[in-house]
Image (cartoon, rainbow, N blue to C red; front, side, top):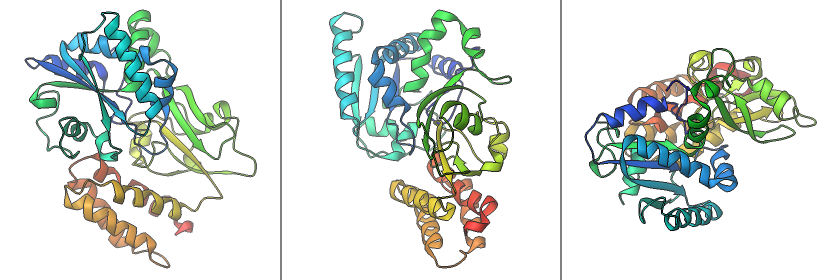
Length: 350
């Protein structure tokens, strides 16, 4: 907790607090790992699992030991067949070395549902049910996988645990910019010269990512807008390119978030209405359909964005409010973010 390590799969909940919450409930306890990586524009976890899977397992075993978990369920994206093969090999090596008992780490394949990036929907899928979010409370720290207290972590969160244990929390916390803690892995794509996974401090700006880490904008492209946190993190104009990227802060005041740290850089070649329609089509396709606001709202927003001429702004604002306030999980609550920012910042593209 002193290191400032956060959940780096989207929600950003402090890792240390999560451990203490799970430890606070009587066992037996379990642990799950979210390797689904379904947020558009995110590819950091795949890179790390291909590069050094053992380091992620080290972090997982430390976390499991800390909460006295009896078993680890590793939920891995099925669209990453090479990574699945790597994980099977690594688990077999851990078992052969006597580090873990056979079956202690249970590898489960996700079937490609974006909704299963939501922790309770992922647990439902692991249990063999349709991946749909649970009503909360109770939270999974109390009633999680198979009804047991469950610690859930993203791959990158586990990646940093070994170094924090070896070098101390102060080392990790100091890697952030002033007022921020830690270093993060940013999946940067779009119209930049050198896209890819960039290690940069918490609190970095998108302008710094473009200029200092990606070699600047691609030839012939001018910085127009960016997605700070994948499809659901919103769309901000270049004039807001100096906002410090982290959980909360000024970014949250603008109705945006870093989420899984997928930064997509847009240029004058991109029409933001078309970008928003593309994102809403994705949410419409991936909505699990459990709650009406998300199921109907995403479809209606797609219909409105497809209309010729200027869309019905009143209807879109009303849908945005209803979806944010009454959807069960983060998918429906965050899905209208691109629409909100289209109407607020990009009226010329309407």
